[in-house]
Image 1 (cartoon, rainbow, N blue to C red):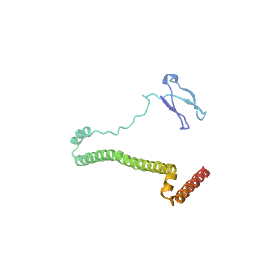
Image 2: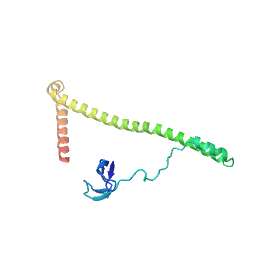
Image 3: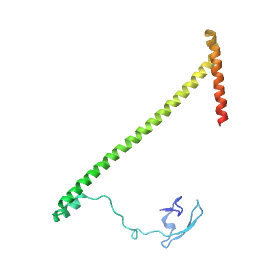
Image 4: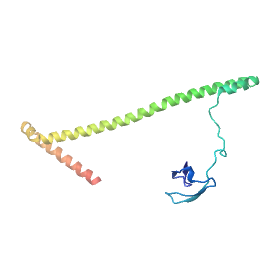
Length: 161
């Protein structure tokens, strides 16, 4: 059985054989509160209303009362419409959730690919810096400025942390 602490912040799963019918004191391991707990018998539990109303059970009562026949037919139509709407809502809601999750995950996957590609380009340029400068002499200034900018960004991020 699952027992909830009176502070309603913690729930505990306790073997029902550990609690006698007359009840016993319990202590919450989270808030240290002590309270008396008495198990509720299922026969003493209040009855609950079942929302699943069968249309077939209503029809014999409708036939007995001709005055309410039109009104009860309208109720039956409304029940059918409500069940159709519930089915449509249950079909549509999972699809919209999946679409939202896919958009967010695609954005982050593209962002990660972009960052990894940028880092690979920097490593490639650093590795082939000397041969590239021999072929393109003016590239030395551009590469030097690029590496200085990256060093400044690195120091900026370290200062933020």
